Image 1 (spheres, rainbow, N blue to C red):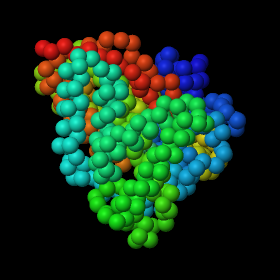
Image 2 (image 1 turned 135 degrees about the vertical axis):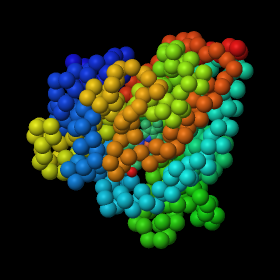
Image 3 (image 1 turned 60 degrees about the horizontal axis):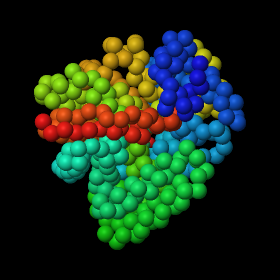
Amino acid sequence: MPALTDPLLYSAGDPHEVWRRLREDSPVSWHEYGEHGGYWAVTTHAAGLEVLTEWERFTSTKGIFLRPNFKDPYPGAGTMMALSDPPRHDLLRKAIMGLFTARAVSKMEERTRGVVKSALQGVVEAGRCDFVKDIAARIPLAVSAELLSISMDDVEMLAKVTTEAAENSTDIEGVEAQQAHVEILRHYSEIITEKRRNPGQDLVSALTRAQAEGLDISDDEVILTCDNVIVAANETTRQAVGAGMLALLESPEQWQALRAGELRLKTAAEEFLRWTAPVTHILRTAQHDTVLEGVQIRAGDAVTVWLPSLNRDEKVFDRPERFLLDRTPNHHVSFGGGGHFCIGANLARLTIRVMLDELARLPAEIEVSGEPRRIASYILGGLTSLPLEFRPR
Ligand code: HEM
C-alpha cells in the first residue's frame, strides 16, 4: 500500500482507494514516518471526530500538520490560535470571532459577488483560462482584502508572494519561499502601525484592540495570526472552488441541474466542500495514554485525521463515491470539528455559493481544454491547474 505521506499518491495515485481499505481493515492504523518513528492514521468519521473534539486527550499545541521532524518544537506552538488549547485558544478566538459571524459575513456578499462576476466576465471574453489561477485563486483574495480592510492592490501583492511561498513550499527550506514570507510579514507590520492609528472593523484592529485590553499577544503573534488566517482562507477556498469545478464539469447532469436552477445553492456548496475536502489531514498529539477504537495510543503519539476519508465514510454517507449536489443530510468534516472548527466556514460557504450562482448564469459553454494537474501534497488537496475553454451560447 502506498504511504499516506507520499506526495505522489495525491498527484498521480488514488488516495481514496487507500483510505477505503484503511476504513475497512483498520480505522486507526500505525504508519512509519520521519525521524521520530511514525504516526497513527484515523480514517473513519466517528473516530476522527473523537480526536478533533476532545482536546483534553488530543492537543493542538504540538502542531497541526505532520512534518518529518514533527516532535521538534513547532514555531508558535502553544501560543498561536490554531496551535493552542483552551483557555488560551478561547481567548484568541473570541478576540476575532466578531468578524466571522453569519451577520458580519453577509455584509461581504456584495463585494464578493462583484469580484466573481468581473473575474468570470474577463475569462469569458478571453475565451479560455486556467480556472485555478485566474478564478479560484483570485476570489478568496477579495475576501482577504475585506478582512484586513486593505486595498485590492495590496492584497494582490500579498497573494503573489503568498503563492510564491506556497509554490516553493515543497522545498520547505527553500530560500525563495522564505524571502517571500519575510516580505509578507514586513507588510503586515506596516498594516499594524496604520491600524493602531486608525482602527476599523478588521482583523488587525480586532487583535490590537484585544492586545490593548490585556490579551497576552505580541506584535509578532498578531502578524503571524493574520498571516495564518489569510493563508488558511486563500489556499483552501481556492482548492474547494477549483477541484469542485472539475467535479462539476465531469458530472454533466449535475451541471445541467445547476444551470436549470433545480438545486439549492447552499446544499450544492456543501457537496463541493465534502467532495473536495481541501485540508487532507490534521494532526493532534495524545496528551496521555488513551484508547481509540480499541487501539492503545501512548502519551506523545502523533494522531492524524484524514478528512477526505471521513467524508467518504460508508457508515455516514449514502453512495459516498458520488458527487451529488442535492445531498442531504451532509455531515462532512471539511471544516474540521470541535473547538478549532474553521472560523472562516461562513465566509468559505458564501464564496462557493456566490461562485455557483454566477457560474450557473454564465452565458457560455464551458469545457475542460487540457490536462488538470493535481497538487503533490499530503496537507492540501486539489489542483494546480485546470485549463478551460469558454464559448458564448
Ligand atoms: C473551503 C475553505 C476552507 C476549508 C476547507 C477550511 C478548513 C479548515 C479546517 C479543517 C480547520 C481546522 C483545523 C484544526 O482543527 O486544527 C480550519 C481552521 C481554521 N480556518 Fe479554515 N478552512 C477554509 C476557509 C477558511 C477561511 C475563508 C478562513 C478565514 C477567512 C479560514 C480560517 C481558519 C482559521 C483561522 C482556523 C483556525 C481556527 C482555530 O484554531 O480555532 N478558513 N479550517
